[in-house]
Structure formats: structure tokens, C-alpha cells
Image (cartoon, rainbow, N blue to C red; front, side, top):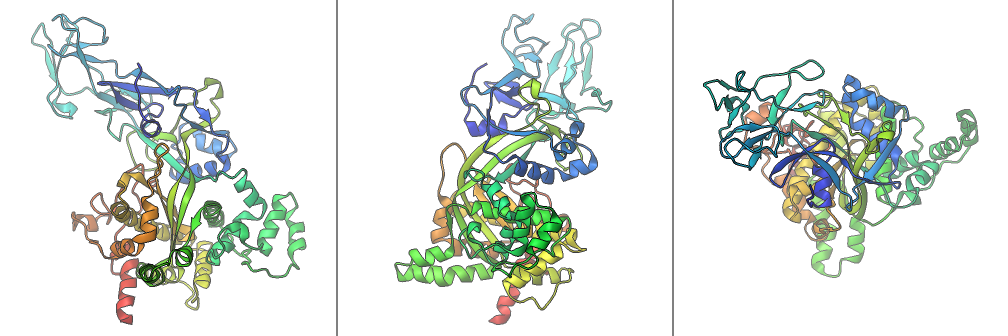
Length: 570
């Protein structure tokens, strides 16, 4: 069967073992036919991102055949893009049909019905289980005549379906439960339901510069990127940051020099312009380095800052006032330190696995995609797309974040006053005894802020909300909003907002309605739902979890605290 779909539709909706609608029938995707291997994708960054995203499945040991443990031990991982000339292979599923005239059930589309009719409709229901198994539903037949008429009312509930014999009075209603290969009862649903198939996606920053990440690592990348970020990203790129004592030590270790010898070689180096971060330790140190490196890689090309607008775009009194007064005031009102625009934001968006039966991470089995080449069954494939798009990097104010943490029960050093000192204190909190609590608290705040920002930006930029994606960098007190690349078209809406309406956008983030249409139910439950903070699943890599309006607008909410402080100053 041949049909045409855009490459973006295939990437997000025609993944292996997914059921799809084509030409009025239901099909299951067997595999991508001869996909193109993306050698330019950094597999180590991809590995780290997958393991971080899949932590709950790995902890609960609910990943099929322990493939996450295999990846952690260095198992092979490859990224692939769609070959538009070859497309994907599909097969009819389920192979169950009903005569459009008399509703008699057939197991073969080519059968001629006893009523003489040749046209048939496909049954759209399937049986599935959290172990990942997918089967056709079992159609009961008359025990005497072995035939069945399917009486399917116009509802989506299988409990309303009735089966009767066209030759006698035999009749039964509802579906019969049957077991999957793991021994548990399967569930039934229409094949398009999200519970039947939920892909697990991943997004990484992947610069087009050859070996950019390797070069950054070789130059003490993680420590250097953190030092650059602590200092406020004053330099246009992380490449311009002077090396620190700790980054030089990291560079020496990367080159194969033993740790003890590297300590001796760097012990008497003079202090450089950057920060010495050797005292940062703990399980979150790796994440801090990775997230700072992510921003560093994004900055290698096309970074546009507010200073650039003030320098190059202030040719009228109106623009001078907007860039020098209204923009900074709007950032202060929303607790934002800076907003940067990246016109060529390099990302790889991919899918590496899927689940059936539950959206909650760690509950249903995480099933990796089978490799299209059966001989490469030990290689985990990631199917996606490598592209450049536009994005906004939003950095929250460390001073306001530190105050907010203190108000929410996390002890902090009150003597920290400058943004640099406040961010250093937050890094020490992340690497201290309360590290996981601090990180989870920051993630909830920044994730909630990101969703609020996306829902507002979609209005101002004229972009569909599902056309925007996010990258949460909680240890960097930042998040990235990017336009989801579709084909070769770049919209440019973010650039227009950044140059002309950023103050209005930020004002709306702070002032627009912050109650929910489903209150008090929403606020009494999780404090976030589809009516207030949720966005489409493809746009949110965290499945709309760990969100709460209270972190923004509650009595101790981030934006509420800033608003009260502004009122007191007046």
C-alpha cells in the first residue's frame, strides 16, 4: 500500500509498532525502510539524555530486556533520520473486517460476503497490555454455525458492542477478556488512543560544528561552561571564557593525566578570571555540567542579546526607550535575569521507545524500538530529525530564586547579594545534603514557568501551542523554548516578539489570569491541568508532570513574591 505523508508527520506519528489510519483503513508500522544514519549526532549526549529521561523505568526495572542498563554500560546507540524516498513499511492491523451491508464478521478482506457485498469496514479496536503486547480483539462466534454478526453502535465503548448469529438466536454482549503472553488480562481501546501507544521522545542540543562538544570537553568544557554561566554569560560564547584552575585540571584528566598528577600541576596556578569550582561535588555535579554545556553549545552561533538590540537597534527614541527601560523593567517584574534569542538553535528531536497502558514513568514497560536491520539487534535506534530552528533562552534571576527557596523551606546563606554569589550559593545547595530536594523544587518552578511562558508566547508569536517545545535546565535556572522544526520552514515569530513585543509578552506572563477554569478542583489536586498549565504531550518531555500554579501564584509563589516586593517599593 502506497500513500504520502510529510516527513514531520512520519517522525511524530509513524513510529515502529504504532497503529495509523491510512486510506480509510488501520495499519501497523513495521519499520522505517532504510533510514539514514545521522553520524553527526553526539551519541554520548543522546545516551545521557535518554538515561536521565528514563530514570523511573530504570529504577523500577520496567524497561524491556534491561536495555537501559545495557546503554549505561556502553551499549551501542545510533540516531536515524527518515529516508523520504523509501518511507516506512506498514501492514493491515487488526486483520478483522465487517461487511458494510449485513455486518457479518470476516477474517479476510478479500472474502465475498454471503449477502454478495464486497465492501468491508475494519474493526478499529485493539487489545493491549502494559508489557507492550498488542493483539487483535477476540471476536466470539456462534458455537453452532461459527459465524458472527457485529452490532456496533456509534460509541467508543466496547461494552456496547453485541455479537449475534445470522443463522440462529445465539447472542452475546461486550468483550471477553483474554490474557497476553505475560499471563495478565489485556485491555481494550480504539487503536488511536494515547494509552495504546505513547512514544518516548528526547531533545538534545547538537551543534553543526564538527566535534564541537568534544572540543569543549577537551578544553575543560563542563567546569568552563559553569564558570561562564556563573559570571552571567557576559561573553558571547563559552569559547571566549578564560580557563579556570578546575577547568585546566579537567582538561588534563581528559587528556589521560592521572588525577593526582593533575592536582600537582594545577595547585600553584594563579587565579584566573573564571570561578574555581573544585568544591562542587555530589550526584548533581554531572547534571550541572551537562546543562551548562547545553547552553554553551547553543551559544556557539547566532546568539542575540538585549545588549545587541540596545547597541544596533536603537535608531529611534521609541526603540531606545523600549530596549533600555521597558524591556529591563518587564524582566524585573517577572523575575527574569535575561532573555536571549538563538536564530540557529541546533537540535536533534528523536524517539527511542514507547509504552502501552500508562503515561506514568516507571509503570508500564518501556519498549525500545527494534532495529530495522535484524542483524543489529544489540544496537538501540533513535528515530528523529536533526535541524536548526529559532529559540529563546530564558534565565531566571538567582537573587530572586534564592529568596524564593528560603521562603519555601530551603535554608540558604542570606549574605549572598549579587547574582553571581546567589547562583554560587544555589550550586552549593544542589551539591549539598538537600541536593535532590532543591533540584526537584527548582524543576517544578521552572517547568511551571516554562508552560506558562509557552501558552502566552503562542498568542504573541502566532505559533500553534503544539508547535513549541521546551528544554528544562533547572540547575542553570533556565529554560529554552524552541519552535518545533517542520520540514524546511522556519516561522520567525520568536524573532519578531523578541525585537518588538518582549515587554508585552512578559507582562502578560505575570498579569494574565492565573486562576483555573476548573478551580477549586484543580488547585485542590495537583494545581495544574489541561485548562491552565498543561501543553501537548509532544511539546512536554516530562509528560505534564511536576507542575503547579502554586509555585508561581500561590502565597509563596515566585511571581507573587516579586509582585509584593514591587508593591512595597512603590
